View 1: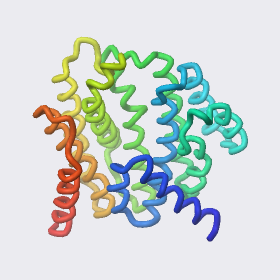
View 2: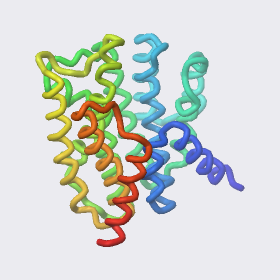
View 3: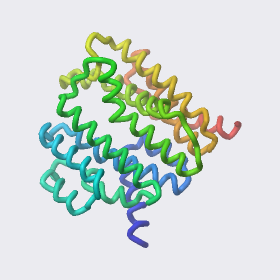
Length: 276
C-alpha cells in the first residue's frame, strides 16, 4: 500500500476519533469528496485544538497560531512545522501534530484553497486569543464565529465547486457554519459560564443567542437549496437537521439529543432522499 493510501486510511480513523458527529455526514460522500472534506476538516481541527486547549497558556497559543498562519501563507514546510510544535507535544493531540499529513492527503487541485482557509482561521483565532475572547457586540460575535466556523462553510463551497461546479451563495455558506457554531455555543452555555468564558455580546440574553442561531440556521437552509448532488446535499442536511433539533431540545430545557434521536433524524433524511 502506498504512503498516500495509508495516510487516507489513517485520516478516516483520525476523523472518527476526533468527531463522531462529523463522521456521520461525511460517510455519505463519494470517495474523492470523502478524502477531500476529511482532510480539510482535520486541517481545521488541528488549528482548533490549539485555540481550545485548556492547559496551553495564551502566549503559547498566539505564538503557535500566528506562526502556523505564516507557514501556511508561504511555503508550508513539514520540518519547520514539527520544530514549532514539538516543544508542545505533551499538550497537543495527534490531530494537531500531524497537520502536514492532512495537507498531504488533500487532492492537489484543491489543496491551495484548503490551506488558504486554514491560514485565515489560524490568524483569526490568534487575534481572538489576544483579545481574550471578549465579545462585546453582535459584530464581534459575527467576526469570531466567521473565523471559527463560517470559514468552514466557505471552504466547503470551494470544494463543491471544484468537484462538480456546484455554486452556492457565499453569505449563506458563512451562515451555514455560523449557525452550527451558535447552536454549539448555546449547548455549552452553562459550562462556558462556569469556567468564566462567555461568547454572548454585552446586554444579550440567552434568548438573543437563540434568535442569533435561528436566523443563521434559516440562511443555512437557503444554502442547501441550490445543491443538486444528492450526496453533497445529504452531507449538508444532516448537521443542519441535527442543529435545528438540538436548538428545539435546548429551548425545551433538554441538555442535548439522545443517540437514538440522532440516528432517527439521519434515518428520516435518508428516507426523504430516497423518495425525492
